[in-house]
Length: 413
Image 1: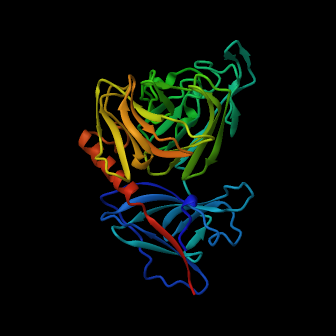
Image 2: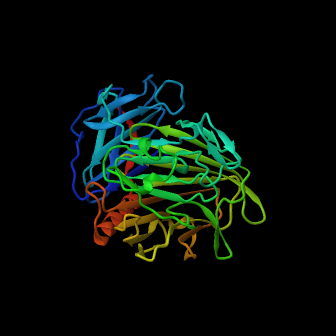
Image 3: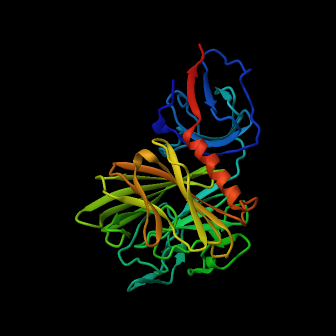
C-alpha cells in the first residue's frame, strides 16, 4: 500500500557521500509490515521523513525516541491524545537503492534522541501596554498567541519581535507585525540557540555573539520567503488586517512547525484570510512554507530581498517540476557571504519578476501554495563558502525535490 501523500512530508539534502543500512536481507515475520524507502537518485542522500499510516499505528505506542535499523527516529503524538500516530525518522539512502524496514520488528523503543530542532514564540507577561509599547514584564514561551491590537514594530512585547524556528544548521524568525518579513539567524554552532536570543528585549542579536547573529537586513522587502501581494508593480505587506494568531503547532526533536493565521487581510478591493505553516526538520537548511487561502488571491507573492552586493541567478525552468531563484554575495550584516534561495513548483507560478526591493515569485490564484526557502551563511560550522559550493548545494536539493523518495508499506503474508 502506498502511503497517502497528504500524510508525508519529505525534506532533506541529497549528498554526494554517505552510508546506509540496507535491510533487504532481513526476512519479515508473518503478519508484520515492511516499510520500503526507495532512493531513485544516482547518489546517496540523507532525508528526514515525517509519515503516518493507519497500518503502522494499530498498536498503542507512546511518543518516544526510536531507532530503525540504526537510523534515529521519533514517535510523535500529533493529536495530543497520548498515543503516537506519526513517525519521524532520519535515514541515509544509498544511490538507487531501497531501504526495507520490518515494522515493528526493527523498531527499538525508548532510545535517547538529541533535540535538533525547535520553534518558539515568547511574549511578555506581567507588564502593561502604554500606547503601543509594552512596559515591564518578563518573556514567557507560549504555544498560542493572539496578537494584541496595540502591537506593532518595536513594541518590545515579543522576544526578537516574532516567532522563531531553527535546527542544528540555521535559524529563522519573522516579524509578527505589519512588516511580516522573514529573517535569518546565522549560526556558528550546531546546537539550539533561540532560547537565549533577545532576552534583553532589544535587538542585541544584531551584535555578533559566540553563537552567531541576525545576518539579514530586510528593510522594506519580504526578507526571505515571506508573503505579500503584487499590485501595480509594488508588494503589499500586512498593513491592514483584522487580527493575527500564532501557534507552535509542533515542537519535536526532529521536526517543528509554526502556524500563523491572518484574518481579514485587505490589500486591494477585498478581504482574505490565510493560514501559513512554516516547517523545519533536522539536517536541512530549508523551511517548507505552505499557505492555505479561504479564497484564491490574485498575484499572491513571495521573494528574496535585493542587495547590491549580491548577484542573482536561477535554475533552468522546464515546463513542469521544481525550480529556484537565488542570490549570493557579501550581503550579510556581518559583511560576509550569504546565499539565499526559494524553490517553487513551476505549475503554481504565474511569473518571476523584480520589484523595487525584492526578487519575486508571483503565484497563480489557488487554494494552497507550497514552496521552500533557505539561507546558507559562510560562518556556519562546515558552512558553504563560495558561489560554486552554493550552486552545487542548490542543484542537489533541486534533484531531491524533483526526484522524491518513494515510500510504500507492504503486508507480509
